Image (cartoon, rainbow, N blue to C red; front, side, top):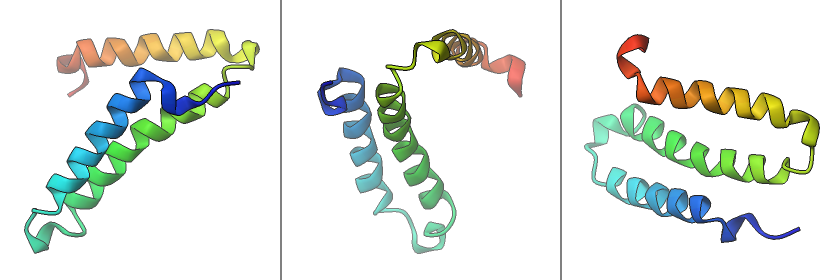
Length: 84
């Protein structure tokens, strides 16, 4: 079945997540439970979503929904001014 850790997207996301985690260590103490936690959680969620999608790839009936959601998310990324 393979290993999600060999995926290029996962490797890049993990590297970025670790960079963000290490940089967040330098945040001021008053941000410990605010911005720092949000950054760490959001950076981890990218890796988790890649793993989840990789493990569900065998369920073909979800492919159409996945494609549709992916297109919507991509549209939001490319048109952020419409979502303010």
